[in-house]
Amino acid sequence: MVVVGALLLGLSACVDPYEPKLTLTAEVLVVDGVLTDIAEKQTVKIGRSRVFNRNFASTVAVRGAQVEVLVNGTPGIKLNESIVTPGTYELPEGFRGQAGSRYQLRFQLPDGKHYESSVETMPTGPKIGKVYDAFDSQGIANAERTRFTPANLIYIDTQDPADERNFYQWRWTLWEQQVYCASCQRGIFISTNDLTGDGNCRTDNTLPVNNFFDYDCISPCWDIIRGVELNLFADVYGNGRPLTGRLVAKIPLYHRQPALVEIRQYALTPGAYRYFKLFEDQTQNTGGLADTPPSPIVGNVRSLDVSSENVVGYFSASSVSGVRYWLDRRNTSGTGIGLLLTLFGHAPNPEPATPFPLRPPPARCVPSDTRTPIKPEGWR
Image (tube, rainbow, N blue to C red; front, side, top):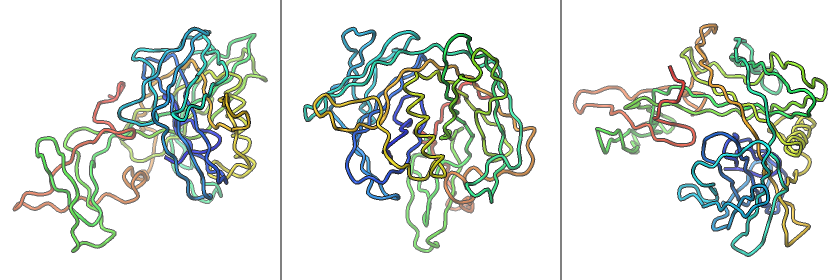
């Protein structure tokens, strides 16, 4: 994963990835995690990133750190490193943050250096009141506004609490049912287990180099797509007022089949809001999310040994309101831009069927961060 610099939301347990490019040549320590009050695994990730130019960066997970989270100043809760994902440190199963509680991250690297975050108090946030959508045939534009993608625009209503400052961020996760579970470039899929769909691609030099064959899923399968847009709001001009018609997601029309989208509303701490807003302002000044911000944005984690060391990322705590919304796409028009084409860069091309030998075989839905064989909660 390419990570450096300003907004490293993808390193947290509950927030999705945006990975900016910075013109740096030195290594930077990257630390990120967001504790939430949702019943799901809570993690903190630690890595070292280096950007060599606009187009190339490398990130190495930091393994073997001693990591703890202090709750209300009490002795720390130890985090254990994931056996699956190096550099990811997990809080105990069942841990959930609580609004009003104070959290601080402390850790020691294998080289003996010590770090700690600022103390973050989890704010209380309102619930999402209503979710609804509208179709726009030109819903998503490229940076030059010369190309448009049809999309369902997702809106929410909520009530901002009175007599307090509130800071928000909205994020979305989409589940789209996928019918192809394997793709072989210049090759064919060879099954090693006809019951499970396990197998691998075998090169066939008689095929063109750019030929792809795609293979049906042996069982239901869903691709997981996460939004990367920043969507921040402070109630400085609308304290205590209803927040209606807030655009929180633009879901591309991949096809006409229904899909499931989860909208999450994060109640941010003031420090987290300032951090993300500074990054948003920098990217607006440079033209877009993919452009190079003028400088790295240092977060709230500091070295206790080298005061001049810049540490990138932000450790925070956020109460979350989440709603899963069934996107039936009955209001759409057109055929869509193609799920396989958009995600994997080629249009579907199933291997031609033959009776002797019986081909093609189906393939297994291999679980990952972007794919699951488990029916999502809320799927109809």
